[in-house]
Image 1 (cartoon, rainbow, N blue to C red):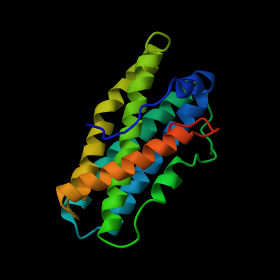
Image 2 (cartoon, rainbow, N blue to C red):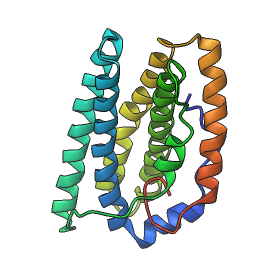
Image 3 (spheres, rainbow, N blue to C red):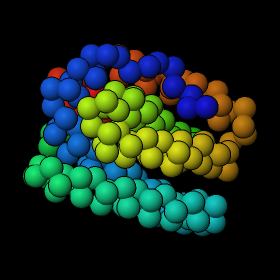
Length: 193
């Protein structure tokens, strides 16, 4: 369903245990960036009604999630602040082809993979935190469905620009690269490190 070619490691969960505050701050930034990505896609493909309609829904949901994470930060007295960026998004975006319609396909599929990885990590967090922090575990469990829906929406919208077969082949290629990026890891403690 999520088209991921790797699973997150227990090493990442160890980072979560040691630096949950950093993960929560990064999560807020991820939601804000996801809304921005959807807005950029809507701007780039304004003439495509399906994209503008779906991006409006995603923007609203991502901003709602952003505010939910900010509330969690406030409840825990964690100051929301800037963070250095992990290379995950930058490396994925470097794979986007430069000419249309390939660019549109890649932009949508890259967004889909980021949503898929978030979905996978939220599910892991929900199970991992269940016995220690039921409220936070429940929050992460509640996000699974919308993140999975965003993933499938982006994949479906890529088919506005290429056939299903072409989209699935490219998704497999990008997913393999995404797995390599995740495997390389990052010293920064982030949702996608």
